[in-house]
Amino acid sequence: MANSVPSTDTPSLLARLDGVAAYDLVVVARRQLSPAVLELVCEGDLSGFTAIPGNDLMMAVPLEGSDGTFRRRYTIRRHLTDSNQIVFWIDTTADGPGSRWAKETPIGSTIEAIGPRGKVTLDELADWHLFVGDLSFLSAAYAMAEAIEPPGQALFVFEIDDPKDVVLPTLDDLIGVTFCVVERGGRSFDDATGLQASLDALEFPSDLGHVYIGGELSVVGSLHAALLERGLGKEQINAKPYWRLGVANMAHGEPKKVEVS
Image (tube, rainbow, N blue to C red; front, side, top):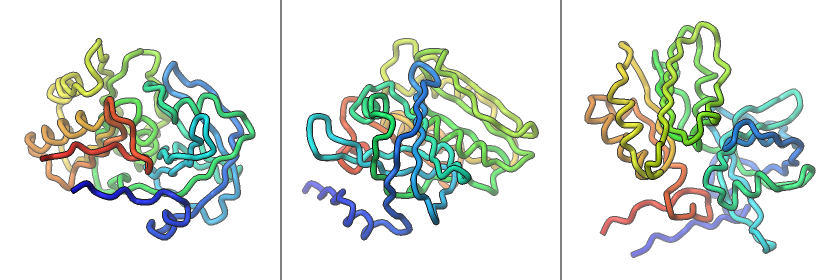
């Protein structure tokens, strides 16, 4: 029997989700950080808004050619409290309706956002933090990494198509940094072998670590399983699929999971 899809209208979401509120945001700035990564800045009345690094907002993106909307979840890259602004870094690689909205929506347009949301946040007890994935995970990874208290270690393994998409985070000078770039080289977006080979070659630091994985659904699942086989405990891994190759995200913004017969 197919699972019912939760309602995504605003009253239903506010009733179902704990600790969230609805905000009307105005798009005030946009700039291209790299060929695939776009920065969008929104502002609004954010009284009482508090987000943890790694949290996201569920945005009501307008349907193309229609008066309706669909939900897409975008990580809060930064919350600028002094100016009541929220900064998003949006991966436009797939050129789906969400990324087209981010690229084309007029400055001054408004959008409803519900949040903050998200279960994947920084493990403050870990001595080192490893972030693995594709560009869809970049914003969340950097938001969490920039919250690491020094001294600490941040390791990044990211797969990209274009070397120009290597946009770097801003980290404290006392944070030890390892950054590995995996060029996709024509592999399919659901092929985990490139990231897996880089992880296999990476020597994990000693002490207690935590791994955060984000990206395409099949890739996230494969890497999660491999890290468990390597000896990490379930409590040391957060795995978050952001999208699924060839299948549009559902109306509430999540990728459709693989059905098991």
